[in-house]
Image (cartoon, rainbow, N blue to C red):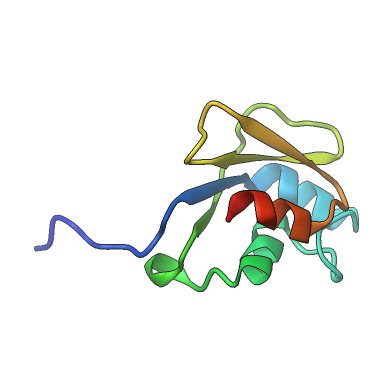
Length: 99
């Protein structure tokens, strides 16, 4: 059995699933079709799928911040800085910060 698996990720981006789903249900999502933030970021970054992607975008359970009208995002390169992305924010601007 393998004990290690290689991935092409340069870094990982953690997105709060609970916040993202809540906004998407209220039609306050991201991108032109009001999608969840993780889906919109994957499309904008052209990240690809799974471990062969350039950047890993992972939806995680509630992070405990629960901002009103926003989604909590953690970039693994700067784990001390948690970002709050406002509902309806331009995904292209957020993607630039996460490249």
